[in-house]
Length: 186
Image (cartoon, rainbow, N blue to C red):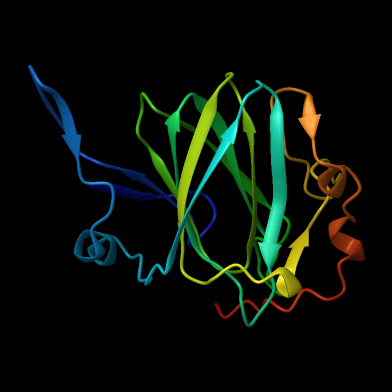
């Protein structure tokens, strides 16, 4: 596996080695040993999968508060997405900065998003499936979101969303999220 840190410290692009032959292909999508060698130390407890039928479907920006915050490892197994991570840790020198990576069934790249980051994606094709691992269980009482087009963050999604949930459309701005309890630890 090739593990490369992005411009945001702690956010990594993971590129598995793909072995192909006449039968098709094989890849290792997760290896605790290889991830730790690459600087990612996490124990996943839950796998999730989403399907989006329409190009331009936006999901995000989402997070979970402490004590149920989550690190995630995402991959797109059908279609293509722009996957986005935003640092929302108070005191971080990267606070409100974002990184976006194209993940697709073809490139097989994955994005590791550590705790203390908001996450979202927009579908770049129809019929998209996304799978991700989380290191903490879903806890609705800790669930939160930030408006997808918050000018303080300034994510360039590459297109206007076509489909957006009411929850995401009406989410507060980052500056209005006073309950954020992620602390930058250097």
